[in-house]
Amino acid sequence: MEQTDKAVPDAASWWPGRERGPGPAPGVWRFSAVSHEASVPRTRHAVRDRLLAQGMAGERYQELVDDLLLIVSELVSNAVTHAAVLSPEVVCELAVTADRVRISVLDGHPYRPKAQENDPARPGGRGLLLVKSITLQAGGECDVERTADGGKVIWASLPLPGPGAAGAGQEADPDD
Image (cartoon, rainbow, N blue to C red; front, side):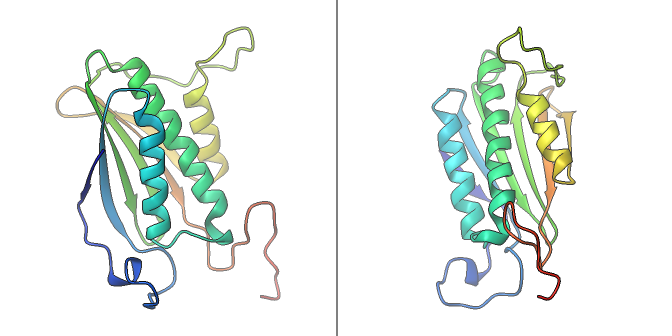
């Protein structure tokens, strides 16, 4: 898997013991992978490692990281399952800003997928519905856009938890 840093991470993200300001370190990273099912866990692990390296370890970020990893798994899986014929490579982009994290998956296939209704009689086909649901529940947004070369990029953008955010399943203590 090829990883290309578009932004240089700050020193605190790669020097243990160095202090950095509150919140994760911003940057943009691209992960290119062959359109093959083995690329799904490889891309998920690369994204997880980068999220943790950027400062999203710990209870405060656990739910966000879990959501992002599920989203990237679904999007890369869809790309290698449905677009591999016309797109021998998929690209996952991770962008971290001061208040959001965006996951994008780009492939060269022109078909613009839509989230399907939940039909228990039909196996599969609910990945985009799951991505949309997770994204909206987290207060984010997602969409599908055409690329200049005729392919598509599917993305989801989620807000970072606030400074007093509690971990998954816990409420923040108002006295903190």
